[in-house]
Image 1 (cartoon, rainbow, N blue to C red):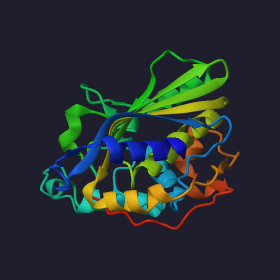
Image 2: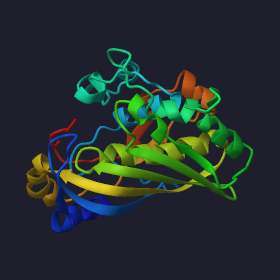
Image 3: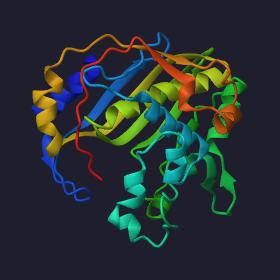
Image 4: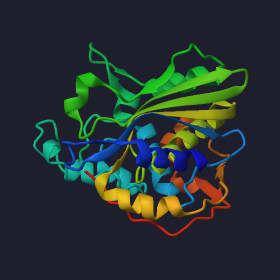
Length: 283
């Protein structure tokens, strides 16, 4: 919580205003933020200065890991975060690549599970990483990236959390995740949960101990219509201790994640929090 609140305070104190043409709402912005999550000691990074809902974040991650490309698929597993970008983003609605209602295009998990090669064949980045790590292999490029500039126009949104690098030292697995843009009041806790769970889950299915997860954010911002709630409410609250995460030990393979795992296979113990804060969402 301290590093989260320090980042929020840094943006409030030192951020610069940037106009955002996509949303039409300006942002108070800083460049470069580095966060760390202690997965080894199960310090689950749920925000405690407002109520946070972790299962939707985990459901979204599961959708990415399965390569989902449709908002209806995400809704079926308990995640509604793609409804607006799939169906209310005017630029995407006018895009000839859009296949119809709820279509997201070639974003996030589509790139991670079926990256298109020039010869028309597909590359499953996640399977390559899981197979290597399961065999104790780290070739220094155990990377899953959702960032494909050649197909930006074929999706409803460029990926924000775009690249994940796994590193194996002995029997301990680490993760470094890169994010180009972050809505700190509303989106960051989603992203924190997903980075943490991604490392914990891949460590579990590849037979390794989780270490630390490193989360690098390039552009961290607070929207103009969120600033008052951040300054006058959230930053004035005292945080509670971090809770712990329990993952179903029966999750043992990538196929398990693809076939039957749900957000209900993840439970949080000891979560104390303040009342919810309803931050505006900019599409």
